[in-house]
Length: 170
View 1: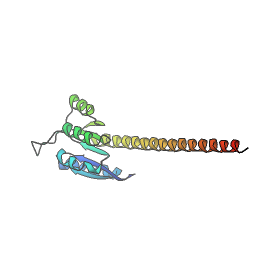
View 2: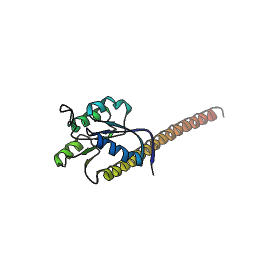
View 3: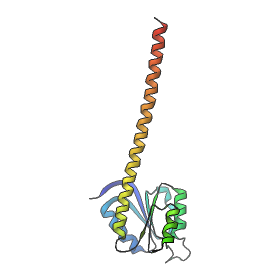
View 4: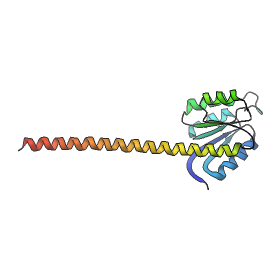
């Protein structure tokens, strides 16, 4: 069952095109996001104006371009541009230091490539969707409360004015 996510983007950033395509196919079967793939961080940074909700970012992005920035450097720039984007590091690096560094710089989660990576990715995307729903409900709640407060102030103001007029002309 696909979850409706119109006009929302997921960016997949991996210098291995096959990895990007496999993940794109997997996600597109389960979620209705607009998915864009990138082979390096510099290119994805140029598209940040599209305000992706989720970015899946590889740590090593230099297998084809030795001068390409690594995933943590790209993560820092993504977060500087759009702190609300949820960045999931998907990497072959099974090193605790890399995971900690990624999380320290704002990654939502860190997934090691392997047999269970795609199913973990699906769980993370479901969690992000749930978080997004809770945030939207919270924002709506705040808006309704603000409107109710303003309405109450207006009603009290009108009542006070009517009471004043009534007492003055009695």
